[in-house]
Image 1 (cartoon, rainbow, N blue to C red):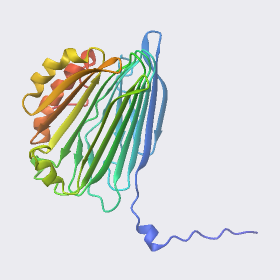
Image 2: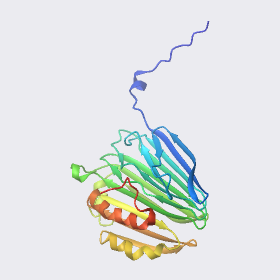
Image 3: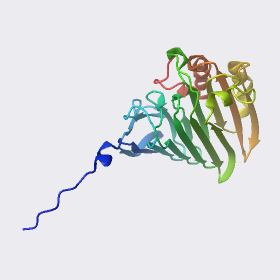
Length: 283
């Protein structure tokens, strides 16, 4: 009789902290005049719920059951919207990125939309803690005639809790293509001296909360005056015609997350049309 040798775990291995390695994916299609779920994948701490599955657009709520991210954690989301279908994606709560003892946390997002389809990517804020290290990547592939509303907000420390981010690392990379043509690309990086960098006049001028909102649609420019009215003096917006469609890009900043949200909520509610703001969002 053969007896398997016992697995020997060293003390160093036993003390290694667990890391998140999770992915969630969803695919939807237009059938019988309504947007319907075609495929759903959940792995690890990544969960997807659809509280309004009987309505159009379909709303998908993304949940990280790990309760936050730290160095070494990896989280990925993917969505595929078929031709003529429509979906709003949001998160159950703000994503918190905690201090990293080593490595960095990553979130990767890939969105694809078929001809005449629409996606609204509206996660709640990402909250950075002091000495956090975080990298985020967003890749969006739109077919001809597809439209998108994309927003990302980041808060560097919760001022109401007396928190401040002195040092850390944050990297944010966006690539958006329409009909196989790159129409929007940006890279934002700050660190390791976060507070000093954000205090500069060319950055946030001392503010600690910021948001980027992007609209890809043939009629994007028609929203410009109303968007500027909501943003006010702490931010700005511009619109262009590019790649056979339209693009509106808005930036907002504020001294704290609550002040930012007071303008971001009505702005996203306006730009998301009849779908309005996801129910998870609130002041």
